[in-house]
Length: 333
Image (cartoon, rainbow, N blue to C red; front, side, top):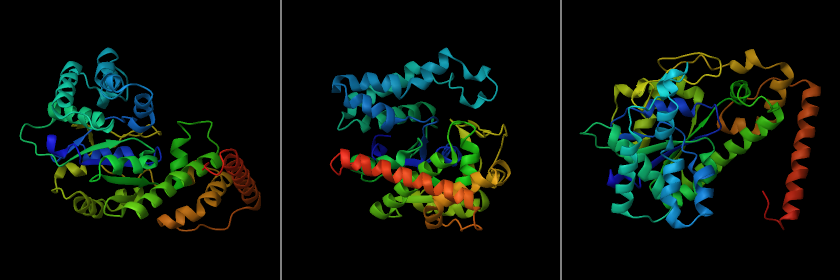
């Protein structure tokens, strides 16, 4: 476990793009230590650590990185329909805490990222098979792509897998969670996330930053697995074909109340069934250039009202970016 602390795999991508499916396909592989929940390390833990003294970093890790085991003990999710696969009551919080303390005391701390690796490997020590010989630890949180510079600075041997999904299908799923997101807002967010991935791949190379289309994963799973084995240099295992969470069956996290026991193509094409013509056209207009760069084909001509609506949204966003740049002396995004 000590040898792999500098060998992370970060799963990146927009929410509801298939990142959970990827993580849970990797979950039971004996050469991987896969954290079963999103750590939100960069967007939640790290800002707290930056505003605290180094003496508080360990306490913050206990509160915000391994808290899922404490929280689950006090709020047993297994008693709630649909959350049976997220019951970690069989993993004692005190044992995870003890392993975390031991790792930090033994190995020391070079940067805040060492608390993330220590937390995940503490979990792995308790849950992995005794004869496991892991090569990587794996963490999945949406928007990890925005922190690639920090990832590769702290962990030069890191690998990232960025999952991208057809924007209309992605919106059809995500708007059930974020009901106040307009097609324009979502499309802009999708473009920003995907462009960040493209820029990361250009900067760090495809051998370290892999952009994976969700559709390719579910339509040609064996081709995907071949590429995965090459990307991580791990052995083929039957467990890679059945998603699990913390080693237990996982039925998916569909926003459409569907359960799955294996890789399924059912989510493909949801946008056609769920979105109206204007919503689809607005999303396709805003995402067109970025979507084509990922390999999604251009669609049929859009109705004029939708084009006008999307065009005005883009001009509004351009104005806001210009105003921010002026206010920050050219440093704004």
